Length: 473
Ligand SMILES: *Cc1c(COP(=O)(O)O)cnc(C)c1O
Image (cartoon, helix red, strand yellow):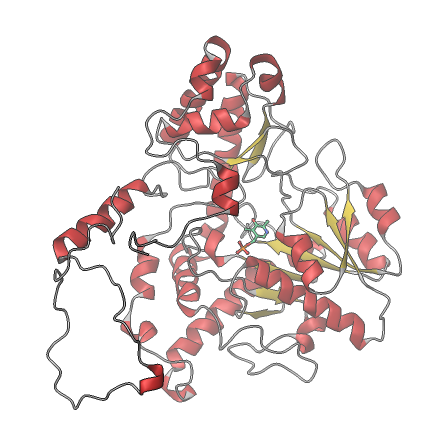
């Protein structure tokens, strides 16, 4: 496909700006360019076709099934986009006098209130701009809490080996040492290992429940008790609340602080580096350490301070509020139940087709298959299966994650998929399994129908080419 610079022709273009009707104000010499910028010159219709063609090469939830585990790629109601585009929300400035933006403040306060109720926390800040940023903020709260009590020996954050990679990274960034807690054979936190790891250096434990293999930690009350008795706090990674929102609350499980990803569970599209939002909630005793909130101003005497400029990724917050108001109290739980039902439905169908789940029994909103045996028997890997799905218009699940499962494929169908879609995906995967046994070669070469098939992923990650090089240099 031609790049926009390659389609450029000197002198082509579209006049979008009206003629200048104010005095010209030249840029001071020292700031002025010596040469005109090399911008593509292209007519409007060709420009439009160029981006349309690019869009057709991308795959999103509105194109087809997108069961990317741990990411909650669910359909986000268009209503949220309409609400977030209202001029009253888009046409404001964060430095505007408060009395001129009362409605926006109310919207933020309502969202804080709703999220506090959903998580079972007492206070919420909307500041953090993403999940990992929320983790960092929450860990700073934990750190401030111990410091404030003069308990400076608590330097270790415990993280299960199945955790999302951001957990240990955020703990390290917040200045903690990370200690891994192994999972047991059922994929759950090993209580004995947790007890053994807890001590006077324990600042806290970071946990997600359901955990990263899609299982609910049945011993969660015992887990939070063990950490509390050792003097640590417990952090809930609620990036993915799809399985439990409206049904169970981290605050009731003994968690002290948590974050949510509005850009997974609460109606903002996730992925592609778009705006996110990772609100943090905490119990009352941590409130004095919180950054400012929409309602409570700049935070208290012991506040860890602002964690971002201004209040929040505001329009992401508006989408979340619109989503929650549209669902209403009762249907928040229904969405979670639908997510769990769909995951179990697909899991069972794939098991019937001959796939092996990494962990047996009921799952929550996602589940992990292990293709270790298939690889041994046929040479077909999780990567081959994922690539083959592309030929049937299905986005692959998350691959090779979590690290504790070999040849892992992690599916999260979400509540917004119809049973027919799940049946069709199961049929596609059953057929891939048949081909793996009869004609493994065809799978090593998949996908056959996409523009890009098997890029050198290491090179793409290590040496990305994101700048156009003009032929004439
Ligand atoms: C996505 C996710 C995160 C990180 O969220 P970002 O917004 O990508 O920083 C953290 N934990 C879990 C469990 C996640 O699924």
